[in-house]
Length: 414
Ligand code: PMP
Image 1 (cartoon, rainbow, N blue to C red):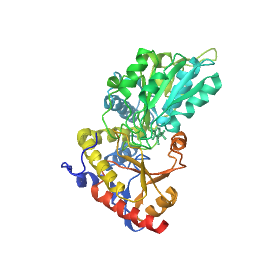
Image 2: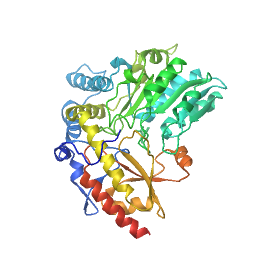
Image 3: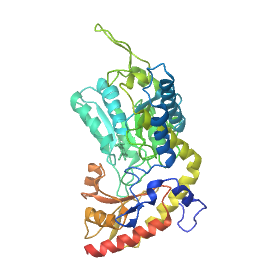
């Protein structure tokens, strides 16, 4: 539940902000207010420096070289896998496939898990509130197999209608998917309950954790899902990093998706044998420096602590929601009972893109558009929304500056 806006807890946000070099820059001559965190987060110095140190001191390819640099690079890369596994409480580090992000993770499941199993008449279940990364890969493989993609509905507050999701878990459904947190609405979905229902019916569940991991501690074992996809750049890490966690039984049964170096045991023209999981899914040279940075991002989260992060973000969410609600003609899209600090909204008589462009001139970075969620826009009957997405390094003062800027640009467009 959201904390009341009037009772801020002590949280040294200025000390935290000092760790993020980009936050002190100006934009169009104005101090930056960065409220586009659901798109990508900013990076603390420790992440930037970890990558810098990797290239300055340890750069080599992984898993191949016997020289010291190769050993150091391999240890750093595999150390990131350990850290990520521990971060989401995976039962084993070997169940964690390092990917370029959530998109690669969902595509891996689509082509390597779903496609070989799907038969004509089968279905994959997703929801109306998903990011395209949790819709389009399913459509691509369903189309090849003569299967379909079904979407569970949501209500006007932007909450999943869980009874209907459960009712749609019929025998032809071979994979169920849901986002833990909506990138547009901030809605937190009841993943544990959904996972319980999937389990009863023997249907594997994939959870898109892209927007959950930056805000709350994740425990894939407690969630009870089969697959969990995440992306690194929204959680203080570099772009081009992410992961798929999957239960070992699924990974063992899945054929490799990409072929090439690093994923084989022996290659012969008569037939090739593959490396053990997770390596059979990691063909080619990975983003070694990126994962060094992601490991530093996890250290950073752990040094601040998710209790403090979540409490602060919930205060900011409550405060920003309260301030936005004072603006005449403003409608918040997404009013779920449980939300992360993401607020989509519309202002009567003004285009979202015009507002975002003018806000940028005031130093305020928000996103406008469909947020890679066309079906959700269709549900609400709008082409786009404006989205302010907050992080734990944002402040109440920035919310105030955002509101002042919004009132100003609204006036210009009226
Ligand atoms: N799912 C959700 C909910 C997202 O917000 C995003 C990123 N906007 C993605 C998936 C895709 O992540 P990436 O582009 O990093 O693969």
